[in-house]
Image 1 (cartoon, rainbow, N blue to C red):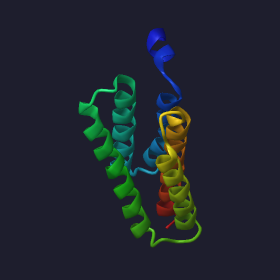
Image 2: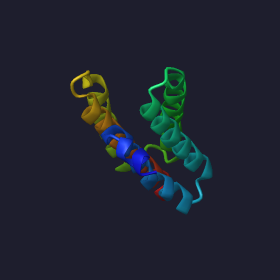
Image 3: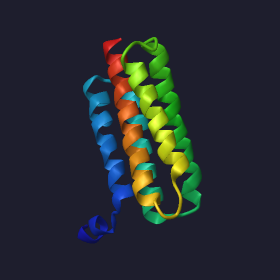
Image 4: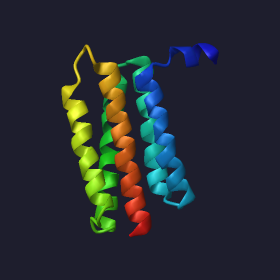
Length: 131
């Protein structure tokens, strides 16, 4: 177990930030969203740990599923202020990190992509809860 923990880099650790929206979804009984968040977190962690090409598709599918689920939540809370606009702001931030990633800054920028995705998901959940 200690060797496993020592193997984790910043991009792997940043996956654990998804625990925050996962707990929020569980507290408010949004179980489908909780399942999507948990699955995305697990698949992303496995993908980053093992770098196996077969996990690329699963990682992309779960990430896209989370994005779609967040958009659905936005529709359900009718894009209300301020949550939709805050989520949209962090979508721009996330895409900046995603599109600016290269070999030299992959660890940090991909971790910031994860952080931005966590914040987007939190705002979408809060918007839905308050909507």
